[in-house]
Structures are given as structure tokens and as C-alpha cells.
Image 1 (cartoon, rainbow, N blue to C red):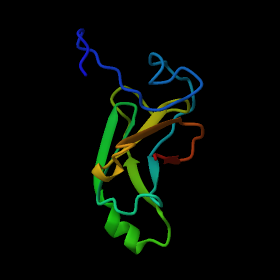
Image 2 (cartoon, helix red, strand yellow; image 1 turned 180 degrees about the horizontal axis):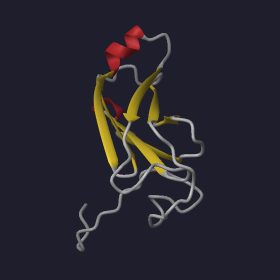
Image 3 (tube, rainbow, N blue to C red; image 1 turned 90 degrees about the vertical axis):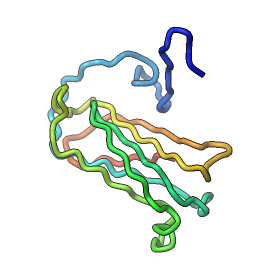
Image 4 (cartoon, rainbow, N blue to C red; image 1 turned 30 degrees about the vertical axis):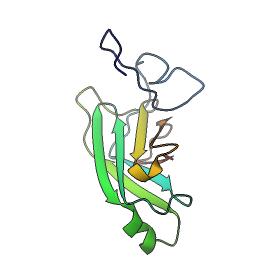
Length: 137
């Protein structure tokens, strides 16, 4: 429901410290990370009936999304967890990706209702390697 002031808050995960969902943006002084690949893991062992699955991820201001045919991919897979890669080759306009920056992913599908519908998780860039994994369900 829209708030009277026009500002609507969205919780994009949980965490023990001030994060995107619990506090204001903070600058980081970590080492720069180039050519970041976010590998979003989507465990679906309890929801094998999922068809179209929307996956959205963001790091800094760069937002990317994909719609995948989860049912088709699950039939081809030996595992019940789909891995969806997102490549971020360039530095966002607001500055280079660094250790300490936050990234998040959300997974959404009609078949996830009820109870979930959309699941979001976030993590912090903790190393200079280019691959970062996140389970988003």
C-alpha cells in the first residue's frame, strides 16, 4: 500500500548490521573488484511446478533481470538448484564496485504463491575475486 508521503519502503533481506533495508547508503573504502559475476542459486526442490521465473539482481546502481523457464531447466538438471549467472563488466556510473558494496537478488514466480511469491536476499562483496554466489530462495 502506498504511503501518504509517496515513499514506500521495501525490505530486500535480513541482516545484523545497517544494510540497504535497515539504513542509509554508506561509502566503502574496499579494494576495487572488476568484471563481477553474480551467480544466483535458486533451490526449487519443493517447487518443481514453477514455470516462468523472474530473477532480478543489482550491484551499485546496475540492475539486471532475466525470465527463465525453470521447469524446462529443472528437467535438464541433475540438481534441484538452478544457477543463473549475471555478468557486470563495466563500472557503474556512481563508481567502481568495491569490497564492502552490497548486492542483492530477488526471485519471483506465480507458483511461489502462497506463501512466498517473491524472495530477496542480499550480501556484501567480501573478496576481490570476480565470482560471487547468492542463494535467493
